[in-house]
Structures are given as structure tokens and as C-alpha cells.
Image 1 (cartoon, rainbow, N blue to C red):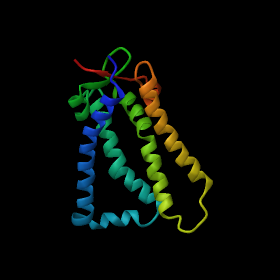
Image 2: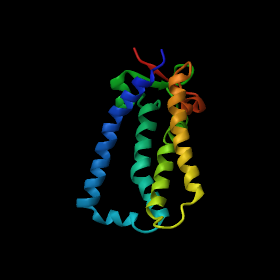
Image 3: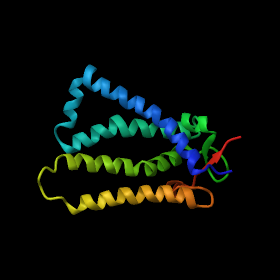
Image 4: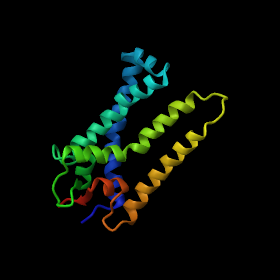
Length: 171
């Protein structure tokens, strides 16, 4: 049986507690242990974006890629919620396919980081039309992910459809 949107949200909220713990650790480390890390975010937009990606997006993505793939089988939140990601055949998802799924899944998140870095430095200047397009794309993807998960027959989000994965209930 396919996992409902509600079950998927529950699993993500449990996983998000782990993510928030990691972000809390990063905050403490950058303020008290390694204050020089803050300098990475004060200069070039490219350096700031890359630093944020390496410290936040990449570790969080790797958590989901490794835990939801064949290597472990379920993230902590999915295990606690009784769901897992599988291929059409019901087999565990290979690492590369899970990487593709995770990249698609977190695309709105990373696009929002991209936009925030640029908006912080806009000042009183003109608001570029491309920022409006990127902001619209972020919301369009988020709504598409949610609506496809709710209304498709197999409860697949858009990123599941593209990655050819399914989230099912585990016995």
C-alpha cells in the first residue's frame, strides 16, 4: 500500500528534528568554536553559496541519499513512521537513483538559498525580474510536489514520478 501524504509529512518532521539538531550544532560551532566560519558568508556570493551548500545542503542530502537507498533502506523518520522508498519492483532504491530523487526533492530548498543570498545583498537597488521567476519556480515546485503526492493514484510526488520511485507502507 502506498504511503499517504500525512505519513510522509510525519516521517519528514521526525527527520527534520535530526536536521534541526545538526543546524543547531552548526550554529554553536560557528559562533563559539569556529567564529572564523562566519567570514565565509560575508564576502563573495559565490563563496557564501558554496559554503552554505557544503555545510547544510550536502550533508542533509547525503543523509537522505544514504539512509533511503539500498545502503540502509529507510531514514530514521521513515522507519519510525513505517514507510520506505522503493522502486516499481518493490526493491530498495540504488544509490544513484536515490541521489537523483533527492536532488529533485531538495531543488526548491536550494533555489531558495540561492535567492536569499542574492536578496540579502540587493539593498535599495532594482529588483531583478529573474529573482521573481526563481521565486515563482520555488513555489510552483513546492505546490507540484504536494499536489502530486496527494492526488496521484500511487501517492507519488513529482520527484517520485521523475525518479520512478514509490513510498510505501512497511508491514
